[in-house]
Image (tube, rainbow, N blue to C red; front, side, top):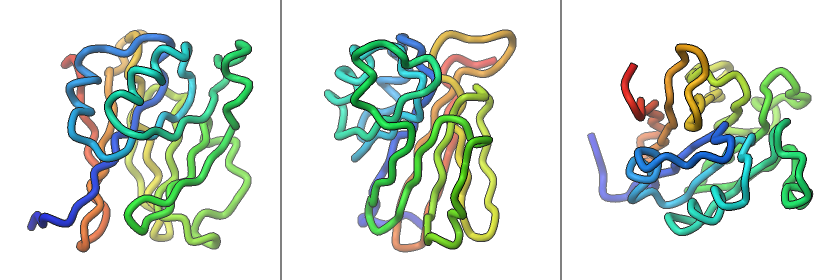
Length: 159
């Protein structure tokens, strides 16, 4: 059941300097955007900021001077839910469930994944940048409603 009281978060990662028109269209209408790192260029963030407010972290390729002001992790509260963002899930050094985190956002692997462990949603939106090998080109949205959190992975260019 959908409700008028919902908040939509767009989640994107691994753009590697490429913000596809398909990604921009998929993010249209979101209330907030989270970028999970490997941004590649400040132009990507500027374009995303035109769509909605954004929280971004740097990934392992974000080593240029422009990226120095971005942290390796971030936490943001959206519509009563806590999102923790880091680029590589393998570097997670906290217990999200113990800290009351609702959603852990990561990137790095370029493979989209949704997994719930101990009541915490682990979400990797996949890569929205250039296709690597035969991996999909994807991003995610999360609808936050009074009934909970509903994540969806969006395939941007088909397989």
